[in-house]
Image 1: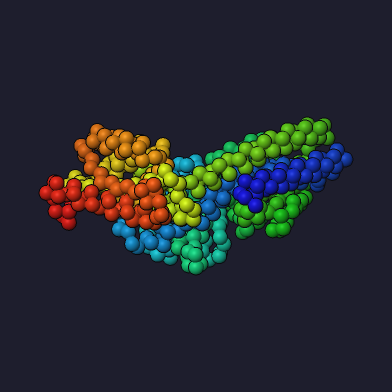
Image 2: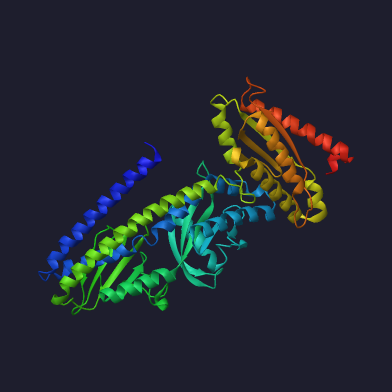
Length: 473
């Protein structure tokens, strides 16, 4: 069964389950008309739960997707092979892409090996879980043995704002712990939603952890400081709505939120007047319809963002060309079938990059790499796929006949000759080409080899013309 069919099936199941839960809610509301305060309170809690249930579901999906992303796993696994500046940039760029691409306030990662705390801004600090109180969260999370967990804390990167951090465990393919990653969602959005729900239902809402400590509340003074164990209500992690009658007309309904590992606590100061029953029923119907629309939109957004996250893993962060991983997959696909008659493989390599890096700095070298990528994409992009497969190494897999390719090659050379940057005034790119029409019996691996040899021959000729010792450039 393909992914689209699985997504549609999951969508249908979720919608059916939601419609059934809505039906149960409305059926329960009938009981309220018979003065059943217990059922009424539970249904109100269910309506509130439906409103807030998805608030942190998406960040959990995002954090777990990060933890299973092979590109990110490879960065942590090979962290020691890079110098600090390079790995900080790579991981920082990745986290920045998650933060900006998915719209979260924060994205972070901690390496188990180096204990570096990476953020979307780069390297934030070196954590000390045993010695620094602010870093105890790391060891506490690992001790729980969970794949993911939620932690409320102040974000020291973003003005100490109260933030819900979704921590996810990152493991290598053999189960070795590589570190922890995740995203942060500021409390403000949840608090605003709680304010609206409290005003609408005339109740007090809180999210508490297993110890009773308040995690989310409209009163910031209560967060991580007030413990609701003093309130005499029942609390069981069985997923049911548990109603407890307190002194006088006060009552409380609790529900364990399994995905979050927290409890929803709905405290009521008194019974709803009989004359409000019909209004509550109408409100619940409207709320159910609204949540259904939000659910439909949320599923679509999650699917699109999951696809975007997957696509991002095939893109080079600097040039936005397809990366080495995409190249290897395309090469593997082409190796399993006969090449088209009009298939042409192109190898391209920058000349003089080391000279630019040494003489003008890495910013100049980066400008050359980005410039080369732009020239390749402009000339060859509409005829096939263009890849960055190494530092200054590029490749293109094109579908074009040899006659048109001759003109396209001339256009590419003209584009390169006209290029000029802010730090570097000109580009030189050595290229090699191999066409399936020229070598009809060869597979993709052989075409790559032939193209590489031709590129290296052109590069040697370029350095001879320039009178440059290539070993020094």
